[in-house]
Figure 1 (cartoon, helix red, strand yellow):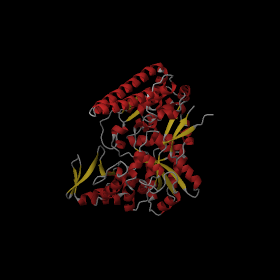
Figure 2 (figure 1 turned 180 degrees about the vertical axis):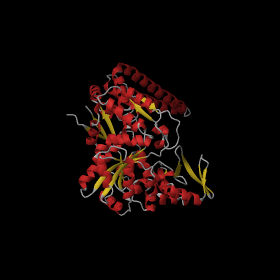
Figure 3 (figure 1 turned 45 degrees about the horizontal axis):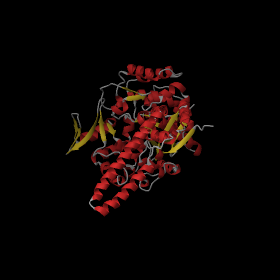
Figure 4 (figure 1 turned 90 degrees about the vertical axis):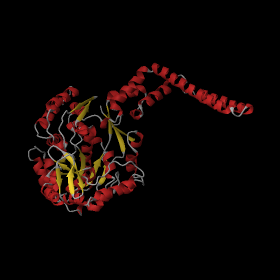
Length: 531
């Protein structure tokens, strides 16, 4: 009987860099840059560290209640928000920008992994409560990254010329955009329900962060997921001490660069700090703050401050200051009673730069956990693979290498000319000896002819393979089609596709299936065999 889930080591997929592999293996080169094992974390230790950190839970809960006041929420969400007042409650957090229509499939994996880990820890430590949190990176301004969705081979792009924090942008033009999504998705038992949900989310809210909050709450609220939008003056106020230090002393630049110097001996660095790692936010812009002498300027805006003016602005309007990637995690860990952060390879890479910075500000560093990765296969694709005598894991190979290997393994012709290469080498070895006897200067000519002969055999070998491939035309076409289907644009499915093509067919059961099959502390890539 076919297993619902199988696994392949990350290193054998060909899609993950060495940093991810070393991180999971706790390689000595990388281990000093994170506090807890990512696969067998000491949760007891991180809980105790967080208990010792002063937490303004009342401010967090008040901000969440205000954020949710216009939404219908499940009892699970309400109870989880209220439980955050309790000193025995901790959060498990994942973070992502408000990509339109949730963006990539891995967004769903991150959310569900957060939910699963919270449930697992509640069973393991019944004396505590654990709340799954989606921390929305709504202040990101990268519309090229956030403003499109890929469905069934089509990229649907939001054409807007708005600038600044994407979360604050108005969802103009979404009626047409949702029409394009509907056409791309086609028919499914849950298609109508999903399209209506998208309309309520994007046509019924004033900005992208509110639309995303509504959408994510509707999809995952039944599991008790709490969404946190940090673009909030109450929450930013908690971060004023660090932001003030950043503006006036600029410690993070020095501290993180020291870490980078050590880290870069073995791995490529993900993010480089600036002298000031804060942006200045307006409704339509998000611009860097730079210090020039005794003045702090906001780039590309006619805004500048003296030291006194800047301090006053920070105290009165903390929501106008936005941390970049270097300080974003610090804000998250200051606001939340958080013990674990679930992120992708890129996120883990920049968190590895931050441990010394956390130590400097005496903010407890969370357990870092790599998000789950999956390939979803369908019965039809698996049947075609079986007829070809291939396994799903074969598809992780480069397409042309896989095609060549398939032909070489199934042909009756001798396509690899090993014997011929050996015969040529022997012939030219003999010729070298003769050349030496006649005139030592002839050796160079023999070497040149040897190179030409070997190249000629290589060309013949290539022609033999090309000719033989034609005989296996339908099989090689099948391999290519399967690769395109399961690895769109030669990328991992989760980094390209959106959740909606699966959701229109299966509805909420799709999330239940994923939740059942994921392991929140896995160090393996998962292959889920769907019916």
